[in-house]
Length: 379
Image (tube, rainbow, N blue to C red; front, side, top):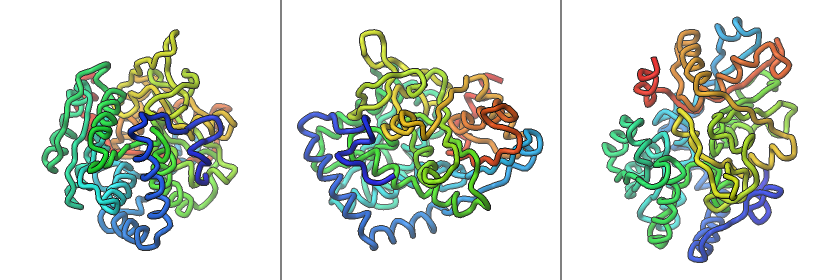
């Protein structure tokens, strides 16, 4: 999990961007490398993560589910971080970096709204402007997070093109960055995009895996997390990639770039991408807005290609059942995104994929407040 050479993870990654963005990406890579090596920058970020974001988040034993399933299940509680998800880890780091680079405005994309909320939060804290691009369809199903963003002072721009979801919001955010690259920082929320984003976001999210490894009384047999672009899973996996633990990423069945895609380029990086017969990027579909994305981070593509990580899918129906099962067994209402990982554990416990007696760490990437309307509509 070192710095990728030329932004590459094996055959994946790279920097496929308009010529106007090449200098900006290079400057960002240099700025992050310098900041990450600067003890003062790291200390300021660590302080914010501790006294503002509420880290470390706990590693909670799921005692009822463990007994029911015949495994030992520990939950890494990113739902308890400030703003309600893991997104705050990455956003605080990038916002501090933007300020260090002399930028005055943050541009972000969001699907489920959690990254947008975190961006708006960091902007308010550090005195920066924030503009968040969000698909019109996602705005409709994530009204609570839209209100949170505007309350924090961010401008939310509806995206009406294409599928009106995360892919299209990312397109528009990148176009806005091209138009204002001098004053704005594009605060990408996942481990996709051109170099240095996959590496930078993974490093900012590795606090999840590093904490979980220190907190765990043992090296787990399996480490599992949901995957869309894949930042919470990349951060979790970073803490265990050098151990014997199996790394399991769980995708939405309708957005399974790793298990149903093929190599291609999306949003500036070569990775596994859902494509049609002509090689055009296909539309993803998921009940979870944060996983409604046709690509996956290039490091995930590499980990899958070399066999270090495994990727599986679950259906929307399984996800809804998983939210309710976790809520009623443990008193935790998780996000629909996180419930993909829960659903896989529920389905596979006691099978050869997850044998009885397995010790499992599962990252709950976010809380489910934002999804109550969706859950109510399918009740």
